[in-house]
Image (cartoon, rainbow, N blue to C red):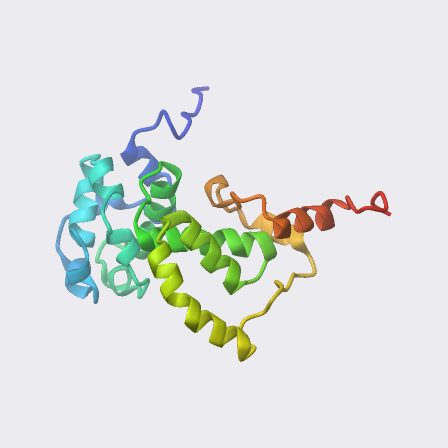
Length: 208
């Protein structure tokens, strides 16, 4: 029996074909219905029709370096109207994951998405202060961060932001969601350490 190729050994086209959204990529005959239906086509570099064509050509860098997958608003207009039944919206999600895994994701929106998922994986719920901290730690935009501080202080004083994250009853459930390794928390914060202790019973009293 032939051994399966690792993700690194497979071609870009093969990787896309193995995803849920990309299974029918080769069925695209460039009718343009997807791009004609896209409400944010003006914000994209290529648009879904050309993205599909570039994937068919194996143009990994052009596809994964583009902003298109991050501009997609997941409205499913393209997928619902595709005459070939290509799940283009799901494909855009798959491309975001592949771009992140391969180190192409340097777009500010991509960084925010990563910060969001890391935080949810950490706590099982949204925790806005950590999302903001992780995002600005990624983009290193101190000017933007300091410009937001006055607003942040007012929000905190009005009790609109929690000081501590709210956990979930089964913290291991988040680990069973199948998130890729690249979205796992990167910072060994005190919050992460406490979460690790809680999950694995490593408390000061010896875990009892």
